[in-house]
Image (cartoon, rainbow, N blue to C red):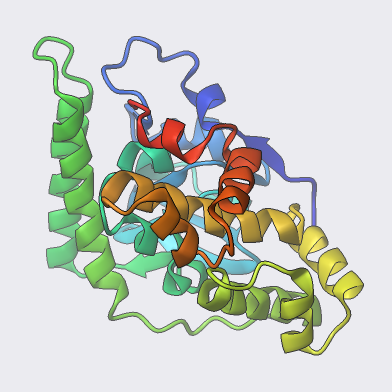
Length: 290
């Protein structure tokens, strides 16, 4: 695999400081996507939703190849690996990027962001009716986002985006992935993510996943790093911390209750774990204004 360029959300929006909302970015033109992502392998530390409105493209997403064309919806969790292969000159795509923190207060967002179906089937073919609905939602969100005359409150954008996420979640429930991994390393990687999404709340040791896959911890660690560009501990902590963030923002659960939900024997251990990966304590994150 070629070197993966790691984009941060903040680096993408650094030239757009005049926009009205933080934590979300919407491309202003349907051809802007080519300027950002169409030429090199990359990943972004944000959720991405893209709607193809014209043209075609061949891309690899999380080790699988997809042929994109008008009427297809691309839904990527944070740090998905995208490798552009080819695209037509008339490719157009509406896209929205948003940080997990922007929508963390919404109760369903965690299930959306790490849903196994999302990993297995990031591309959805829309029928005419669904394409029309999604396109209208995009237009409304974009109008609110770029309205510099009538300031749009944060929670309005948040809930419009929530409506789009609910629509996509309903579509995804009807999908069944037909793609198959082509190599042993890719099969191991997919099987690891299947296990991770089932067990991350209780199992945070690499040895657990290696034992379930009947391979050594060293082999699993090396495989995941080569296939994804991140360590296996990164992916485990990513799942744990994202879920913790969701609970901190969308529920009234105490820190102790969240700690128990995530399988920590002591609350202090959870607080240390959270601070190590989030750079702040759970209480600081709960009180953070996005």
